[in-house]
Amino acid sequence: MSITKQDIPVFAGATDDAESSTYRKISWRLLPFLGVLWVLAWLDRVNIGFAKLQMLDSLHFSEAVYGLGAGIFFLGYFLFEVPSNALLQKIGAKKTIMRITICWGVICMLQTYVTTPTQFYILRFLLGAFEAGFYPGVILYLTYWYPSQRRARAFGTFMSASAIAGVLGGPLAGWIMTTMGGVQGMHGWQWLFILEGIPSVVAGVVTWFYMTDKPEDAHWLTEGEKRVVLDALRRDSAAMGERGHSWREPFTNPKVWLLIAIFFCLLCANSTLTFWIPTIIKDVGFGNPMVVGWIAAVAYLCGAIGMIANGAHSDRRNEVRWHFSGAAIVGGVAMAALAVLMGVPAMSPVIIMLAMTASLVGTMSAIPVFWQLPNRYLAGSAAAVGVALINSVSNLAGFGAPYVMGLIKNATGKVTSGLYLVAVIEVLAAVLVLIGIRNLRNTKEA
Image 1 (cartoon, rainbow, N blue to C red):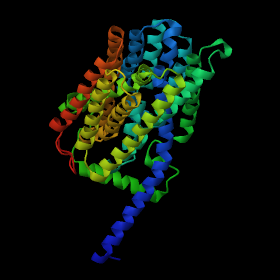
Image 2: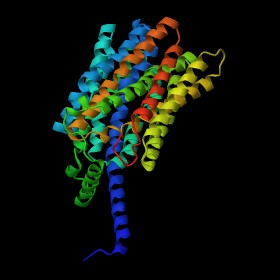
Image 3: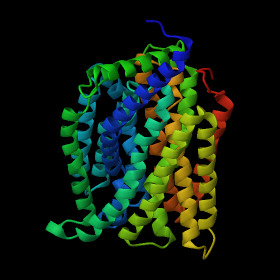
Image 4: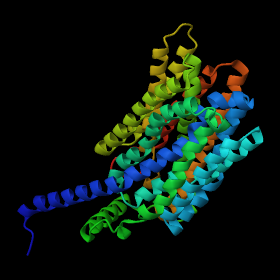
């Protein structure tokens, strides 16, 4: 039976409805679970910022020791991220993410027994080495399921879990450190590492039973739904045109190195905020860990809203450059304002916290939109290696920024000079996108 001209809109509409329905099902299946894992990863990565409020006095560590320990995490991350993502493509996401999740939970708990700076550095390095591959692995994993026009929203929803971790992590860390101090003869910061490490180990075991590597393996999709997904991915791949597929491609592609520079600049800001927000809040005058936690929670809640909203709007508009650059500019300008306000005597703490929150929202809102860019140039093995390469090299900013902030805090007693520097670097990320990446609307050209 032939399809008449009059039938085509109905047929197309039915296809669109089937695809939307299928992707709602996929999103409800994948994104909440991956989000929980990212919450756990983020808690275990950044709880050191809250532990610092007690740990430094307990162990007689300096601000510089803390800054180096917080940042050395990213050296392990850098060294092991590309191999981890290459392994993921070979053995599948389920095995890779299970291994990563269990191992970082164990290392988190071992931080309980740190007594010297050397032990602190070693465990932070190992935490980064074991967590390496999770974040870029999930980014790659989602490209196996979502076509490009649906990815920014999926990325934003997943990545907003880091902001949700901030919402939960602050009050949780404050409660643990306040109420558990002295239990079994241990400090509150020690209990923080134990109680936040155990859920990661449990979640790693659950991963083996819950995750599905690819759409064609999904027992929870009907055969028709599988065809809808595979057809959407095939159409998307054809529309993107020829891209690099060889694993060697990312190392020689100038666009990949431009993306590394852009993301490095953005992560300088993100890492600074991640590891120094508790200190900034304390320096403004809020000393109680519970109060610090709740203030951080509100800021991160706003960040989560920004990530989801900016990613969704980017998808609707099919536009990337200005959604990234606008958010990064807001983050950088707000961070500069934060530095100015912290240097003004008797400035209202509420105004300072508003500037801090605006900086966090702008910075975090740029992240999910950025991850639309690599797949414009890379596919297959090249995408697996390229995403990991971009994330691993860029995350060296996570080593440098906290360490430099620690040195500046040690030397001056304040973080304001460091905030000015990071603000300029974040705005540079926006400039690099606007200058180096051409309009990406409906094209892979750049």
